[in-house]
Image (tube, each protein chain N blue to C red):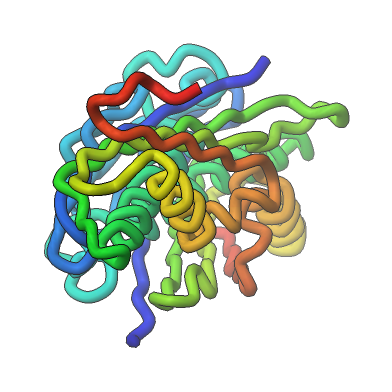
Length: 153
Length: 144
């Protein structure tokens, strides 16, 4: 398969405490999204952050991976809802680190039991290249439930 | 203090012919972005992809870390322009990220700027989370 390249660009003005930046995607899917230190580590105030973009990337990657696993098992998903929550925390040396990405998936799919879904959900995380990468820095957890069932533990 | 940011995606159908949407994110800064396998692995079609979002996250994180490093060294940046290009090999994952930065930084030398950029590349939280990527390149220049 061919290599795919995707690009985004940022303009930053000023220092880190009082400056701000703007993020633009080369595809044009989003452009000039503002961000700042305050929006990153305090209240978002309508502004995105690197960790939020990472959460969006991880949720999108994982949704594709789980859709692929379910289809491969002969049970394509009708609808899949995936939520990724990325946590940035201050570690012992005072620096910030991405310590966790928590995936929650809710699937509407015929003829799949909870046990099978759990197994496919785990292998979808192993098959999603981002899960593997994030594990270099933090933990990745997966919790998948079938629609119509109570939320998992 | 820990900061959490959440994104929500809905997907319908299988991987190859199905489609998805990034519905919402904590901040509300963007939402309703379509994603699908074709746009991710072949034509761009104005749709975003996980790799483009990673490029955005990395460029944003690196720029902040560099502005911090420059200010600490006594030479705050007037402006930094950064791009991140992510190379994705389907079946293999992300094989390369190329960071490119041009800075307007009064009172600093090319060497100091390159050194600060190298430090930012090593230390920004997104770089650390992506440390498993086989190659992360950096091209740092002062605007003349």
